[in-house]
Amino acid sequence: MSAQIQSYLTFKGNCREAMMFYKSCFGGELTLQTIGDSPLSDKMPKKMKDCILHATLINDALILMGTDMVSSQGLIKGNNVSLSLKCMSLEQIEIYFEKLSEGGKVEHPLEHSFWGALFGDLTDKYGNHWLLSYEQ
Image 1 (cartoon, rainbow, N blue to C red):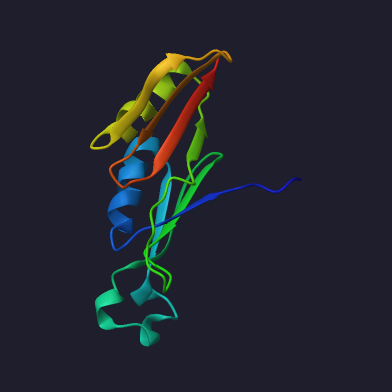
Image 2 (cartoon, rainbow, N blue to C red):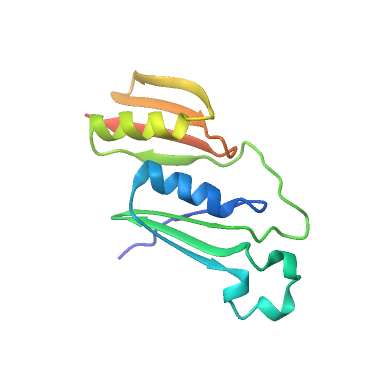
């Protein structure tokens, strides 16, 4: 079995909200572990007890993880990472594109590409860039 890449997103205090949003887009099973419910609880400031230490959203092969644990350098959003979502049907790509774009910015609407896929990209309301494709 080969290795898999799984997306792990870092948020600044709104991981729960973002992961609930992604659950509303993709469905699946969402698990959230707060700092207060972890062994780190005694070592962290009280204000961080409700922050998310680790979140996992699983729907079949789709696995999306997240956290509110920002490194000491702070949260730096850039354009060097995108989440590529290979969709399995026309209906799926249309639904995911519509839901993910709510409150965000569509960079390129869904259109047939020269390489034969239906493709579009957007930045969601949390600043994460998504590339969606469906090869018919």
